[in-house]
Image 1 (cartoon, rainbow, N blue to C red):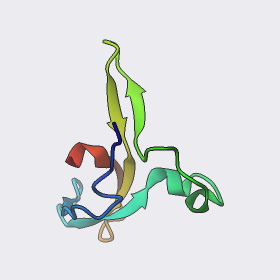
Image 2: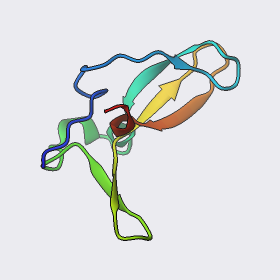
Image 3: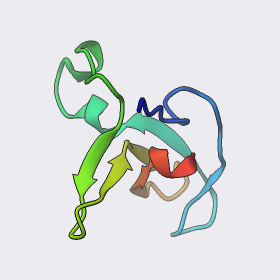
Image 4: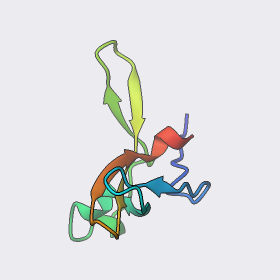
Length: 84
């Protein structure tokens, strides 16, 4: 099955609230785009989703996004695939 991250593809644009100051926070893109100097220009895997193995043998889909609050400079990570 092909999984698509709704945040990466602009299917949804949720409003994030900073847990620190309760002001709006913005999605700053995928975490993996920041991991290397040419990361945004290198091809993704066949799917934009990454999978983590759980103790019971099931898998969870992950596409970690950076969410940043411009007011208090708080940075957090969210799973974009959780918004499906």
